[in-house]
Length: 229
Image (cartoon, rainbow, N blue to C red; front, side, top):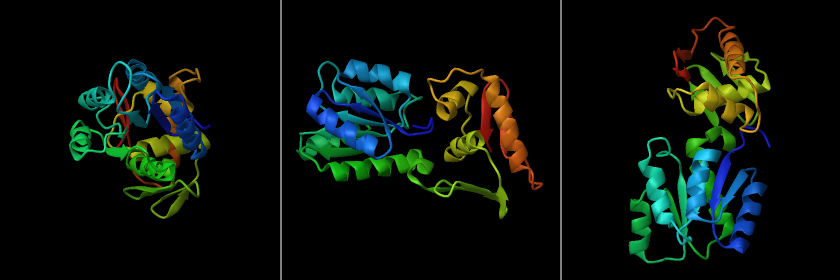
């Protein structure tokens, strides 16, 4: 899979359920990282930097509710979408799950097709390009389905790496990305290259975006990284 493939952390202690969900998530084009316990899940949230968490309420050790609370209380993971799975169908339990910060609450037994639709809905919010959305920032338009970028109506020719860089920037305008974060998102966590490579490709992206004479939309934040706008 590409480095920019959305990562879903699946936290489910029942092996059969985990296998079915993992299969369906991968069939949707997502990369799946699996955890069986709450402690393992909390470790993987930091290690795998998922784009979404599918989280079972009932887990050995740390409960799903507590994991959700910790994810949503930490500044670095507060915006990470969490879909809670639970056999608890009482309204009070659903309310408790949502009040803890869960972005969605799915009652077991559930339709896998419906759950996949809910996953796509949450990813559309945080990784819109990954589900085929068109992104716009000022006079820049990025179409992730046709793999085309235009600026002020003119086509911008980008290589694959520059396209993934621009996608990352346009999904979160204003966010400052460190070189290490860009390496993980654009090149992948298993690829070991010098962080200065990021500077080279950001330079190429800048040149391409400004080839028609427009202002440079990318901002260098000294000691921190890069941002769009």
